Image (cartoon, rainbow, N blue to C red; front, top):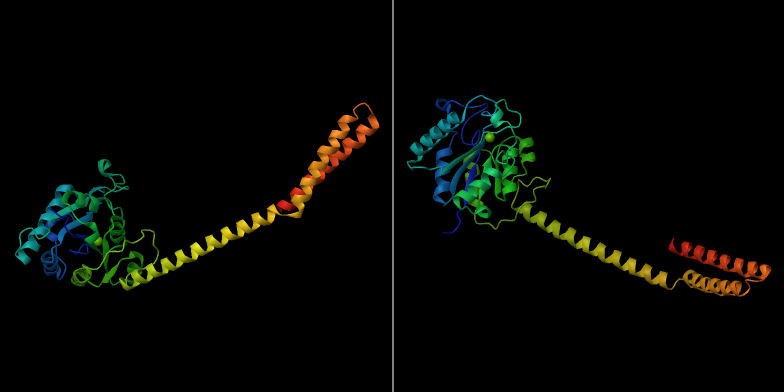
Length: 296
Ligand SMILES: [Mg+2]
């Protein structure tokens, strides 16, 4: 069976209204247009997977049973609206938080967004094609987890600061627009995004293509600089090999050897030995000085 594309869905304020920790299933309210948009994504062949941080479990606000109950309620409301059983394929949640109150949940975890753990786990469990998948979320940590997993991202927000920080591939004002963006761009070739990219890509794909062109330009400049550096280096080496100072130093070393030989031949005559010996030392020193000047 071939890998299937998926849309990974943030939960709170993407699918349902939730401005705080939600542990009460009776308070679940789907955001406008969500069931119809999910249905259109399914009809286009996407698997639908919720990926949600539930640090409220670590903070002791509610337990995992409550999270499951909320998810059952979301599934029930969506399925009732679409008339399709299991419109959403799976719910993944991360109950851990590094600053929790419940010891067993108080730690960092690879599933906690902005880390990509939940997406990668789902891809492995469900045989998903990440290169053809998308993530829809309302927070920069959602889109970051998507980027790190190698999927295209849609930020659902009207807040320009949030949008700028999300570095998403696409921007949507609400979930209906987000699903439309996925459907519009699903057949475009995927250019993986650098996770460390600091520029907003919310006008992609045109912006993405432009960035790529700019990267290619930068690569050409880098190559040209390297070539120039190599050329300068070999030119300098050539100059150094034929330098008159090096030539003089070689001569001085030879002179030093010659005078040292004479000094040894006059070992018995103190005055002659001292004269030839001094000459040997002096020419050696001059050779060293010449080499030092040449190096600079
Ligand atoms: Mg959210």
